[in-house]
Image (cartoon, rainbow, N blue to C red):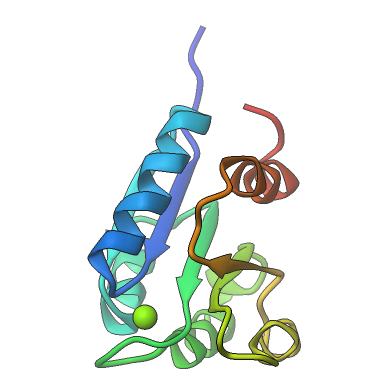
Amino acid sequence: MTTTRKRILVVEDNEDNRRILVFRLRKIGDFEIVEANNGAEALAAFREHPPDLVFMDLKMPVMDGWEATRRIRESESGRRVPIVAITAQAMAGDEQQALAQGCDDYLAKPVVDASLVRAKVERFLGPS
Ligand SMILES: [Mg+2]
């Protein structure tokens, strides 16, 4: 039996935050995880390794998550891919703005709650 591993793109400029999220995802299932440090890297990764799900930090250098999300949504292959915004708790209003600007869901930092990460993954990829 062959199975196709789902691919998850994790975009986050803060290395500690990125590692925590990747660690959580690896506990949840056997995903192929691609990491990016900023929106520009995310777009390159998106083209090269089209993901099944994206976690997108909003505040990043070079290109922020808002712009990267907008550009992904403009592309043919990026219209329907689920994008979960990673929002900072201090930034009130980012959650609703993320949904309004093309994200499907959001996850508040710090990402400490493993069951919450699992819930987001299962919402878009199904149970693992
Ligand atoms: Mg950031």
